[in-house]
Length: 268
Image (cartoon, rainbow, N blue to C red; front, side, top):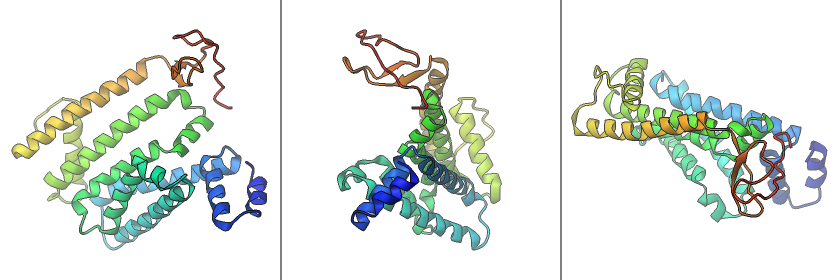
């Protein structure tokens, strides 16, 4: 749908319906206008994520709180837009990204009350990575074949920052400025990679349990990333006969049943 088609169609229907169609065309469309809109959203979301990750460890003065509430307004508007273009409340509420953004929004609106849960804002990275907009961007940038590697990398990064935020909040919060965050990140990476230098450890039973969970989940994510990197590139295209989802990028026949496939190129 082009920009002109969006405008012409918007003149013939109810305002809410026009707005819904407009947002659907912008969020899920493949036109140059939609692509520019999606890139703009991605850039803004990345800036917000950077603020989430590093802001709490560098907060100085009222400017931090102002940015905090601006980010809350933006996430609320995004939730409202996604609710508008959803087919119904059930579909909207069934999406995990909806609940993740709701939790993130709560930590932004009530920073004093929910300060100990601010590390959950790192889940915003996962929300962005699993959005339809991200899938559309990967396709437009001809990176669809590398989607598994990108998703595995993002899942590992999200886990690292979640654990770092948790460790910092409950074990290193007494340290000023960036030093506490660096110690928490250093401990997390050393634990997840099972390097275990031992120069920074978490005290008590809670610290030991945190280390165990970080090692078990972290090494699993590392293995998942390694598998995605070394295995042959695959594309998601359901076979019309047997339903097999994953095929080689240049596959002509389905390996399971031999059905002829018509896998479209990335640019189509």
